Length: 281
Ligand code: SF4
Ligand code: SF4
Image 1 (cartoon, rainbow, N blue to C red):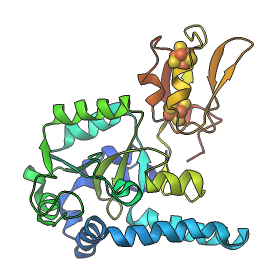
Image 2 (image 1 turned 90 degrees about the vertical axis):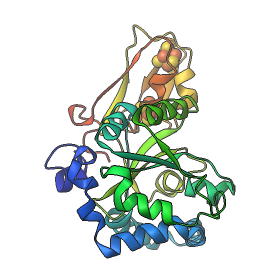
Image 3 (image 1 turned 90 degrees about the horizontal axis):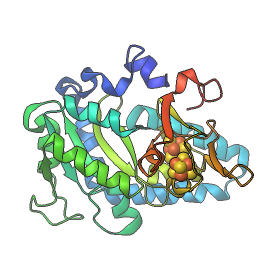
């Protein structure tokens, strides 16, 4: 169980708790303001990204202290967790509104609109979250009209996620002031600011999944397709037995490696049942 499952999920997976998608949580004025600022002020995000990059020049003990402060603050405001596609499907099942929007990280890192993010709400027509998303002038995405925001059915959203999975993107669920859950994203290590912050700079702003992967050595034929898509460096190939294995200490449990394995040799297990990974978040 990650820290959020304990705090906000009553010992179950926190992102499957319907109360965390509640309209009541969104009626908190600070939370609404946070979402509006986050979605509209990309320059602020760019400045934060540059500040995090510049931390590399700071002496190590001070960098560690600043990193812990950033991580603590992010846990309160906008934190994420890697989720395999079957759990995203369960999240979508609870939703009454799914709106695909341009990814703000990619706007900052690539200067392009890439529609990899999904604003989700349990309220009909998106409720207040939908109003916020629809009401924003996303000129940085596609102009002031509403063309940049696509309302998707649950089936359409799952089909889109499967497409992202084929691209090797890792699914994640995000808070907009914890524990309110406002979105599902599809991340990669080079363009996603959160993954860069977590993996490159060692400042966690997202938890690992509640799962880890394992390879069935009898089924594996050593084609290494899975290694090509693992963004977390958790897989190794052994030339002696021509098999791939997973170091579960480093596995984030995204499950993307499964989607390219033609031999169906990879399974996800609950993280808590794997001693080497159970306490690693
Ligand atoms: S994709 Fe499947 S068969 Fe190929 S190396 Fe990975 S686990 Fe083995
Ligand atoms: S080994 Fe773990 S981290 Fe790597 S792709 Fe598979 S599930 Fe994701």
